[in-house]
Amino acid sequence: MAKVWIGGLAIAALTLLACGGEAAEQAASAEARKAEWTWLEGAKQGLDGKRAQLASLQAQAAAGADVAAQVEALHKEVDAAEDELGGRLAAYINGDPPLMGEPLKPEQLAAMRMKASEDIVIAKEFIVLGGDYRKAIEIYQGLLRVDPDNGEVKAALAEAEANRYMTEERFAAAKKGMTMDEVRAALGTPYLRNVKEYPEKKVTAWFYPTNEAGDAAGVWFNEEKQVYQVAFAAVKAGSGGE
Image 1: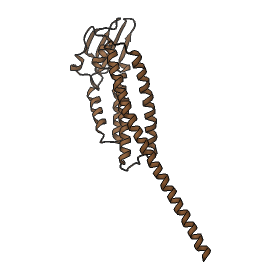
Image 2 (image 1 turned 45 degrees about the horizontal axis):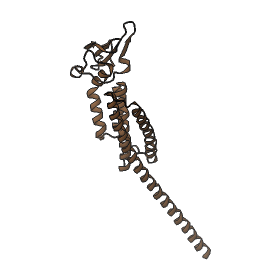
Image 3 (image 1 turned 180 degrees about the vertical axis):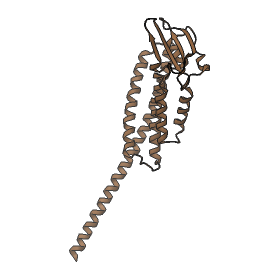
Image 4 (image 1 turned 90 degrees about the vertical axis):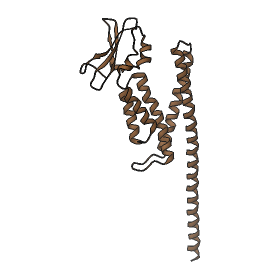
C-alpha cells in the first residue's frame, strides 16, 4: 500500500507540474500576442502617417515643386512598411484564426478590421492608378462577406459604386487644351482597356464608361498630348465600354 500511495503522489506531482507548465506557456503566448498587437497598432499608425506625407509630397510635385527624390525615397519606405505590416498582421491573424460560424473575439475583430483597412488602400490604388473600379468593388464585397458591419468598408464601397460610371456633371470638368495629367486629376485614371491609341492619326483617346450597358464618354488627345475634343456620348452600347 505504501508503494502505491507514494507512486500516486508522484503521479499527481507530475500532473501538477505539467498543468503548471501548460498554464505558463499559455500566459507567455498571450503576452507575446499582446506585445505583437501593440507593435501592429504602432506600425499601422506610423504607416498611415507616411502615406499622408507621401500624398502631400505628390501634391507638391503635381504643382511643380522639385520633390521627386523625396517622393521616391518615401515611396520606398511606405512599400517596405506595408510589406512588414502585412506579413506580421497575417501571422497574427493566423495565430488565432476565426472559426467558421463562430462570432469573432474582440481581438480577432480588431485584427480583421486592421487588415480590411489595409485592403481598402489596395482597392483604392486599383482605382487611382488603373481606373479599375470592378476590382476594387470585388475587394470591398469580399471584405463585407467576412465583416458585414464594417462601416469603413461600406463607405468605400458606396463611394466606388457612385463613381464607377461617369456622369455629365463630372465629365464637364474636361476641357479642350488640358494635358493628360489635368484630365486624370479631373476625371480619374481611365481603365487600361479603355485607352485607345491611333498611331496613324497620332491621337490617343480615353473612354470613361457612363453605364453598365457599355456607353462611354470620350476624351481625345493630339500629338502634343493635349485635349482637342471631348464628347459625353462618344461610345454607344455594344461598341465599347469597361
